[in-house]
Amino acid sequence: MNDRISTLLKREPSSEILTAEGWVRTKRESKNVCFLELNDGSTLKGLQIVIDKEALDDQELLDSITTGSSVIATGTIVASQGQSQAVEMSASSLTLVGACPPESYPLQKKRHSLEYLREIAHLRARTNTFGAVTRVRNTLSWAIHQFFQQRGFVWVHTPIISASDAEGAGQMFQVTTLDLANVPKTGEGQVDWHEDFFGRQAFLTVSGQLEGETYATALKNIYTFGPTFRAENSNTKRHLSEFWMVEPEMAFCTLEGNMAIAEEFLKYLFTSVLEHCTEDMAFFSSFVEAGMSDTLGRIIESPFVHLTYTDAVKELEKYNDRFEYPVSWGIDLQSEHEKFITETIAKSPTIVTDYPKEIKAFYMKLNDDGRTVRGMDVLVPRLGEIIGGSERESDYDTLVTRMGQMGLDPADYWWYLDLRRFGTVPHAGFGLGFERLVQYVTGMANIRDVIPYPRAPRLADF
Ligand code: 4AD
Ligand code: MG
Image (cartoon, rainbow, N blue to C red):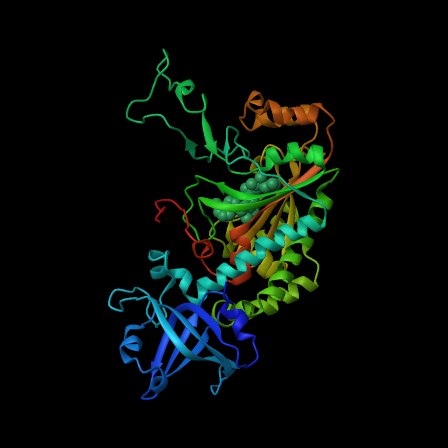
């Protein structure tokens, strides 16, 4: 394999003949010289290829090379005469691998809108913005594994097709192979799920948590990292129907330990992206969200603010005239409230805890007050919730009662309840929305621009 352009750009000038491969971003020509900027996605910056037209003597070839063409150049790395790069390649030979007709190529040199680029998602990775997003996404994925692996957490692969509603919120996509035009019925006229592929109803998972808990109560500390699906009809800048979630689960751990690990985790990820994606982060800081690198640097240095839900509501109520949805104890916090807490009240990432039990999932541990649960949401400026988690209810009877109150049938969760029958233990965990993380770190305004092929209501193109 030949060196990638990121490696070539770090080379010292020498007489060694090297090869560069990539796609042409720009071409500039004068009477004697032709300059190509070649990009292969390894860095934001391309390699400048300089062609001495007299030496190459093939104007037809140069004419056939246009923006978007794939090209192989061989030559030597020389010090650049230009201001914007230290080195460039002086080409001795040039091959056009794939032409790119300029009349029909949808990516031109000018800046395209993000909305337009969403329509050509199969080509948008060739732009600076999406190249940078993709590299940051990759670095964050790697850092997630490093963080947990360094701390002895075991990566567990929980199923994507599941029969259980992990959040009990009824937002699952159903998976079926039944002929929808001719659905088999029981004698009572109900759909006969026994005839379906799995012999029962099955769904795409909304979270790997419940299966994750079964492994945490055997291996102590585990994490999942994979795609999850929500059939919620939310057409917002922070919701996807298919998104990736990281879910650590720790046995012998309470809410306090959960909050500590969540904060350490986020700070580790921010540090990692600043360290490994310096150039891309400088790009986001200049063109997407002013000063994002500095903001992350400051966040790493200071402790997150902690607030109970009850205290957060008391603070928010003072500003009720500013909200579309006024706040009072018992309401689910809207994104406008979450953003207000972090941007105006706390001016810091904030962990809100102890929510009313009615607005949180059945598995969260009930507090002694009988009204609130040991849940936590980590909120960040611009976005609101980035992490949701809790200490889990470890008492069998309390959990069964909570399921009943939430309209769930304990029989459906028999295996989950077994964890409370056989060696129950305090345990806790959380879920980090991976795209929310990428969105936060890059400053990208719309979550649909931080995943290669976004899925949302009425959107499953490509
Ligand atoms: O708060 P959520 O629903 O929590 C859970 O799923 C728990 N089972 C996690 C756990 O305790 N193991 O989702 C967790 C995170 C949210 O904080 C948010 O960042 C992200 O997942 N998320 C979404 N991201 C994009 N699109 C959506 N529709 C999302 N729904 C949740
Ligand atoms: Mg949540």
